[in-house]
Length: 100
Length: 177
Image (tube, rainbow over all chains, first blue to last red; front, side, top):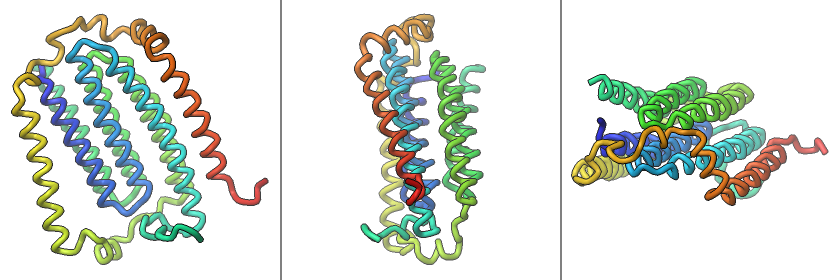
């Protein structure tokens, strides 16, 4: 059997990759994808802990995280499309003004 | 031990694919790599006796959310980052900041790995307690979802409705009525 700490290390590495993506990439779509990586890392922790403690609550929370991720992706991509229409760019630095 | 081999293979694939997601300049390849990462994670969920979560991961994440991303990438004609401009203007490229930030990031990773591997009581094998049959059952999952978590479940439906209306409103062309 695989120790719980191994799952947690995998989850931590995935979360670190997602964080690095949010900070380093200058493409709004890749930033949204990095957020999805972070959400999945957390999901893995939830399922591993739920399995460890013999509880189904971890799996239930994963479903809620998935629906929130779907809502976030839909609204986030709609905003990306709106921004692209205004500036013809996906670089976050292009959207520095609060009003245009 | 085949179980250990499968675990390392799947987690290695998930980490490699995720690293490639942020290592690509073309967003199209990033999305496809993320689908591979989600597939590997679904395998890990099956190993953790959560087959329903694994199937939901494939259907909802790889099937629905990533297709949405692909549509947007194609709709916007997949604009790539300009490599030369990126190198010139990136705020993290200034040497002082790079060294300091890189040091802190490395420290965080080492600290996390050290902390997780140090604590003794998380080192027990996963699934030492609990009955795998009961944990994997969809019937039990549905019962809990519609009794203990019924309020959160209904609230989620309102969240999705609001997100849907918001997405339609935001992506609409101005002047379409």
